[in-house]
Length: 530
Image (cartoon, rainbow, N blue to C red; front, top):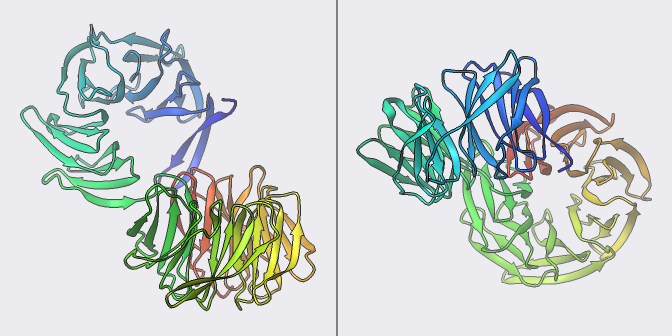
């Protein structure tokens, strides 16, 4: 607790935020619009425990109340009536309640539905099109059916699932049921038509008259269905946990790869669909990069190993065992594809030579005292720069394996980039600043205020050096003019802190990743020649 959970109302045609509503503490559990879209009802999380009705036009709260009454069990879901803008239903681990809104007196009055001896925890609610019945999916795997007018239980069953996590009614009274075990069922009065998906169903959305519908799952996948054949088609997929890093294949700019706590995924940049998934069980990939020839993906793992994969098949080509004792935290490959530079949790930077039948450790360079967070190699392969959480940024000579220059500050560095033409580096980190450094003497040339709070976690620079991009805890992608030191464009799409950002080599596409598992592709606003 201690912070407000924001509700964002979006202007869908304009693809932008139109309002932010602040009242709930810590978490918003569920939302729903009234049928005329005049009101929005929001349900706070366990630390908040309130149900609030908002006026969408004025952006003001109309009224609110404790969602669970005297019960200490939290409410988990809310659903508005299909015909009455003054009626909605809430449910959860406690009672099912029907609420009536009195807009003139700014009050809401609840009525508890009678369940008799039946005790259930409700995960989802669906109301029939004519507002006659309320269907409640439960953690016990059955469905309760209530009469909305009498507020009484009229039927329940059948127990066919581990839990019911999503419900939708179709034309003709059919019911779509999504379960916690990944089953999707089309239920009618006389039959059940099943379909199996990957992981628990989290949401169901109807399109048009219900002839087509979309299903979201806990595995961050979205499926499309047609009611006539009930066959699943994978529409899109993404990571279900924080994305750790992103890399783009140099030169072609056709492929890019992302990594998370579970796997590495390879995507096509023009049609952003998943092409390949590489999984190492019970391991976390911290960073990755493409070798310049595009023939291999090099990756850094928390078990201290460097793994090299073929991007076409996902085949494991090479493992460097015990690369770093406390995990590999950063990685980069040279332009000539003959060396890998890795950074570890104890601050060591190691240079590996790739050989036809294996690898060889060329040198271990130890100056950092904290985990290496980022490594970038100069275009001539003779130098590299490493940033660390110890507040140091070091330029290394990759011929003599010595440090050329060290920058020490009180900040924790998150990202570093070489300017392609001028002998300068730019850094970002926990002090919210972007700093230009002279690579010859290590002096600070310019400091730019990057954001108001949090840290700048990711940064990349265009091939021409005229622009660079940043992303951080403010969830915004920012494009900067390098010489002016000014923001030219701001992109807003992420729901979590930005963790990675990359520009393709022709500077036409920008890719950003975030802690909520999102991968977002942007059109870069400046031409490559600018």
